[in-house]
Length: 298
Length: 296
Image 1 (cartoon, rainbow over the protein chains, first blue to last red):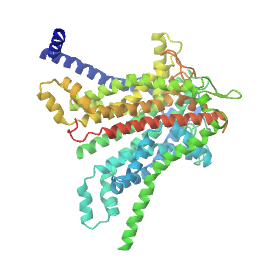
Image 2 (image 1 turned 180 degrees about the horizontal axis):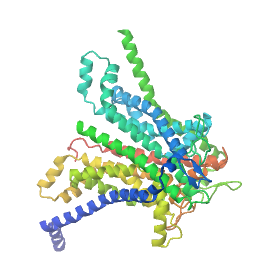
Image 3 (image 1 turned 180 degrees about the vertical axis):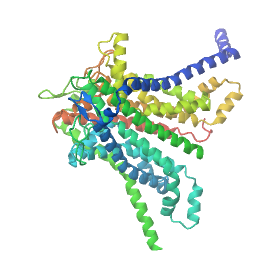
Image 4 (image 1 turned 90 degrees about the vertical axis):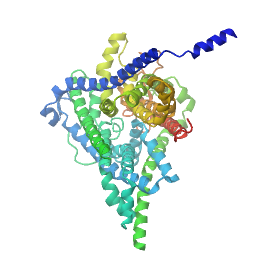
């Protein structure tokens, strides 16, 4: 009895203010170090790639095709391929994504139908990219008979980026104040006129942010295109949407895993990686800056 | 007037049809995965597939035991989460509770850019930078192993975990913090005993989504994990997680052979696993959605 009483008394004894302060200081320092670790990792990655990659990136590297069994020359076809695939997928996913977002935010609201669609969008966003690749292979490449081609790749990437575009577009529509809609309706505008002339114009910058993020995601994607569009080497630049292409991410993967000259092509690998990083992080930075500006406006 | 009503109805209907596209895409993915994956089980038992210890797809007849691949996926996901959960949650606490708003404005974009890094570049760095380092420091047989893939994956799931946890912390009402501080608690005590418990369900969602991202990630495990289809016995054992098998072998698998069907069957399993993680995540988010302060 006595011992339990003293034990509970000891438990009641609060630590002194000084030691609590010290614990807080130590903890805050620890958390700050952890947070800075993330920054350090990203900065380290960028620095390392720039250090090894930038010397390789010359005008010739960017504008010439690979030569000599891929051990020399540039990455021009890969840049073109990546541009075609990512912009092409945007061309399909952006209108569809914006239309879906308009429906969800302006028409459906909180109905059961809308919540089922949102469930679909959320789960689509969580599907692993290699599964998108399998879907593209079985549906676009085989079932629809498009073959390993630009078209199959674009469509696969469009499905993959659709959830990104829908959720950012919905976010953008949500920031448009209801007073805008009410004013337009009060002036006699129909619902579709209100959306087309009032809501969409004020939501467009936010939607473009989403579009940029979508393109960046598509440009860096590898697993989804390795069975649907990408090939290691093709001698000519694509002339139709049924041609297969070379692309930057797949080029990096193949150069550093397959082939007999992995060490010899190391500089090319660094060069391709830095070009891809500059492309993807550059687009993301633009999107972040635009979004930051928008947030300050609202 | 009737003409205008008609036009509005047409617009609404066509938008609704467009909106169902993502749902159709999801259903299409399920349908085609099953169409190409299930034929394997017409003559290969599910138990042999799931619990089989050997993966020899190119033998005649092929042996498709994915147990080592499954365990490889689980091992790399669990290990990377062990790094990523503390890293992501602590960063979120720092950003939302401690950092000055200017510091926050600097660090936050870095986290978002980390999320944007293409996975093939991270995998490349795992190969050229981390692998030699691990081999030298730990004297491992190969630098491409479980630990390497887990470390690289960590930095793929940290941004997810961090940004969703941060939203959860942000949603905790300020009055709770003020109440705790007014009772004499320090800021750290407030964070640990009041803010964190209140945000716990949101952090749970963040963790599930982070793990879902790790288990489905392909390029990193394809390039950094070593590619050996055996059960891992140490941190430095080379492994071959499920996505790596799909990505590495699909090009060689003869069209609609058993091997091809088996790879799609792995795809089904992978899809169902990530679906489970996502559903659990949204369940946690919905069940414990904090409305006001009354239920705290």
